[in-house]
Image (cartoon, rainbow, N blue to C red):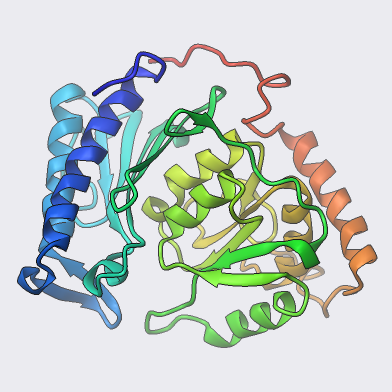
Length: 317
């Protein structure tokens, strides 16, 4: 059922996400019947991923046949080529959880216009939680407006992450990152679904998130959720143009600044100076540097969720 309060394209994406969620929920009732194959070591795909993706693509292209498609399982095989409007799809983010019957997974759909994310839907079928966002118009969980958390001190913060798991992943660097954050944060959580991790930052359930090795379909929708909820998102060095860089970090503005100060030296896109020996680790020093980073981020562009400073404007479609 569509909502008159949502952007028309979000309504179509919601329809697609709910249809995919129904496929996933039905399959979850009989996991032994699910066919599983490996794309590579520790990277699984099921017939459910494929069926959910096909359903999403059919729904989107029926409504918008001139749009492009960029999907996890079929890439750019479907949809219009060289389209300015492209749907970025992860039909089942958290496949390994799904295979094991752990109900932490979701459907993620984003719409990019000339490479910039304009619309987003994340659907958690296990909980029937629907996250939606439109650029400049806020992020919502069902009918509730989302705002990132207000926590400031890292020692009070809950930080989510994702572990490296593919052959060739840089485990040693990730362990150093964990070593930096674990003594400082209140807690670290690994759910196994980056899209949900970002949605939960937007909802204020967690205060920050970081993970290497992510693909655009893992983070496209969640990134817009975070910025529309008043947070910041980028690569480990704080660059907001991160979608295809396989580094993602997000948080409320103060926490994000601290994460950049902590993890910037590990970014593949940091300058040589930033990769120099670790910065000062005392809390007050980290906060001072974080404030400078956050101020720079706001100077570069107000977070999309700040409706007063960045009022909603009509999208070009």
